[in-house]
Length: 298
Image (cartoon, rainbow, N blue to C red; front, side, top):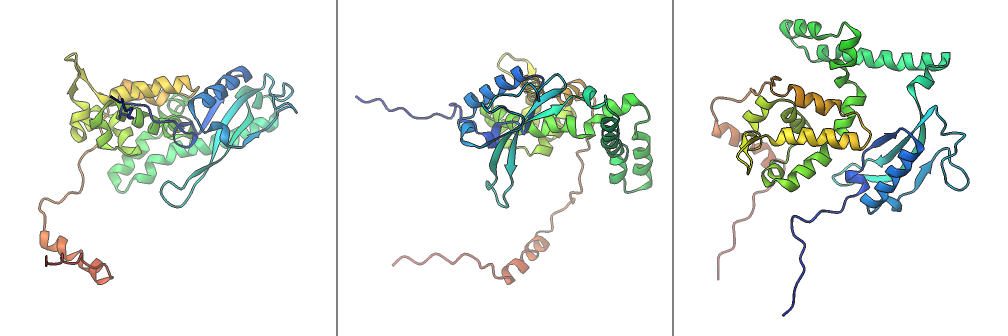
């Protein structure tokens, strides 16, 4: 009698730098950076196969203490070369470089001027974001009312539109989607896009309307459980583990029961099947031929 070993669907799929490693991780110290790199070498089988662009290292390939002093943190990023077609992107290099601390930048007049220019640009993005989408008088008035007018509004609710807090979601959403899909077949089959996953995590009412099997479910213990709430909790956890700002996930958990997202669209009340069929005619005229009739059996 022989025993065959087969890979089951529950076995973990090997993680790769391209698909699973965060785009950029900011480490508070050299020790933290060294520990993170060690985890990457363990977690991603292909990590050591890519060239490393290491700025500020010694001849022995170690962190130079003259560069990585108390004024610096350590950034570790993957440099992705985007291809034109599906699955055509590749990793060009792993980049390690010193990242000045905010308080260190502000110690010099040059640093203050540079930071002020960057901040002014981001503050403008926050202020005008809603106005760009306004297309009538009512929405324009609502957009004006949403413009932050205090420091607190710019640095808390408003910062979701800036790069930092949104970047955390951008870096982690695929990891969250894959992990949830491995635990739930229904979640995997939903195959949520980046935008749809975020909307469902942000609003319980939206998730219940669009994805009721994932939002209004009962777990094995008989308790009500939302997969999207679990996803947001998981997002906060891994953000903290990777040294990222978990604020976007924490806010989802805090406000998703109250936040409303419009689920209505421009769907037509009736289907004009003849018109729908007629709309396909140009494709046939352009040279897309119908499949041939099967040959008769001899």
